Length: 264
Image 1 (spheres, rainbow, N blue to C red):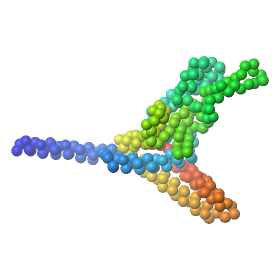
Image 2 (image 1 turned 30 degrees about the vertical axis):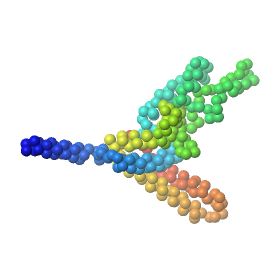
Image 3 (image 1 turned 180 degrees about the vertical axis):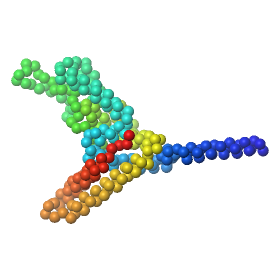
Image 4 (image 1 turned 60 degrees about the vertical axis):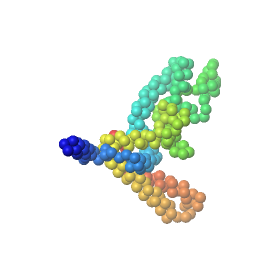
């Protein structure tokens, strides 16, 4: 009998401890596993995609940088380190002090910005004033800083002299193994966990939900504005483009008004 009482007391103690932990923990840190956590992560990822779309479309390059810092702080720090290194190489190349070995090592670095149309390394450029042909600069900066859209979504991020490949799933292929690869799906889940542990998830979800709702409102307003426009102003085959242009204008007006930035 005494043994049974001790067991009951132990169970009650554990239950009280667990209940106290849940009651005193930040709301977002309460345990949610299995289907519950998976559904919450999917909702967070869906809402975050709205935020990324608005921020990268309407914001300056620093908006994209803020998203990278929020999604993967370690990757953002590596970008800074690589930029500092590549900037020094670019200065040496302009001063004609970059060595062949340094150039070769740079060309092997997956973080570098590659030429858009193949390698220009061996395409000599001749000048009337030069006695010997000059090679084009190899250490080149991004044409535009920020996230870049491909055919099926974001496929790259560029900043300064540094380039990242971007994808949405945990691709088991060679791209997934590259050190300069950002998986948005994995980064979303990691950010979800960090915000939940810090007790900031509900606040961030509320903000993201407001952005998504405003985006839908802007889209419907754009459709209405175009539908009520004079027919002679918009050709039948230009209606979709007109809606897209008006939608972009309205959503960016909201962005500038709210000045939304990722939470620290």
